[in-house]
Length: 396
Image 1: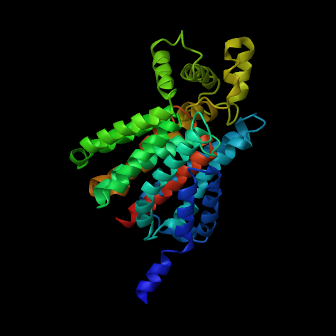
Image 2 (image 1 turned 180 degrees about the vertical axis):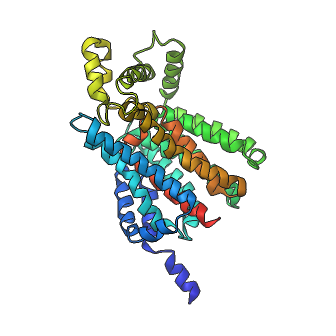
Image 3 (image 1 turned 90 degrees about the horizontal axis):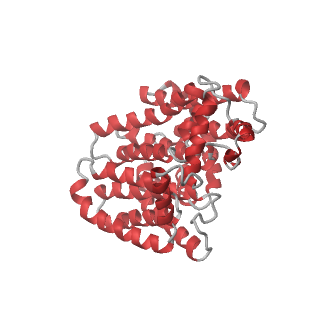
């Protein structure tokens, strides 16, 4: 009877909503509404969770709350942008991390689900990327998502997750295949920031304790094969990388490339930041300020099309000033130091290592895109942090 009840427990609704979310967010990221559905039940557990919270949990909750409060203050008292509320809802997603964590905490099946589903996600995303490139004729694979960026980011993340899990499974072939599939999907998305994040994650696990001997030859060979296959589908991907390199080497000549425009936006952002270094110009006000600058400088007219400077850290600096940047750094630092400390205690635990690499990769993604100003990406970060924290707390 006990065994039957354990089997039934595996199919309880929180686990299956987690599974559905995982399998669909790479194809239809608007499904992140499920994140909110799961969280509703968590409100009933909040008093107990907060009362019994550990120091690490309180630090995470505090970091997310501070990040939201500063954005809310900016929205109420600083910004003059007409559509600032469209930015605010992305910040509010971080508040949902707390009830979501309340639902997921102490759920013994999360590690099993995550371990089982990681390579599947990478393979499904890869198939969607191939369909996008071959059949839907999309120049940058994104299936039915609104943007190839999110598609590329999750492909890179689950490729690295698959590599991490190869150390703790007997069925290594599936996880290696998932890692390769993620690389292929990442390249087909044409997202250079995702590829950069993948390299950072790859280097981090390659030189982690116990990974170098078993991964070096196999992974390098398979990665080269994956690159060759993916590049055959995206012939202009090398041109995009080459364009970035030329821009960095000779900005004056190649300032109109996508990389060149980013450099111009970052430079303009620091001029805007000087208006109010402490509190910023207000969330959602970036585009309005760029429009003002474009009146006197016609070369900035193209930049005025964008409502953020394509960098999470610079965007935070412009919108909410030094205080907002500090709160953003906490959103990355608090989870990172938590997973890092646990990795020292449990060096063979793949989930704390996944936490370290995940936070690092997301920070890298944020260097070329304002990731938390996109609802699906903000939800993805919140969701993964809640899950990885929940799993690691069970191993303490």
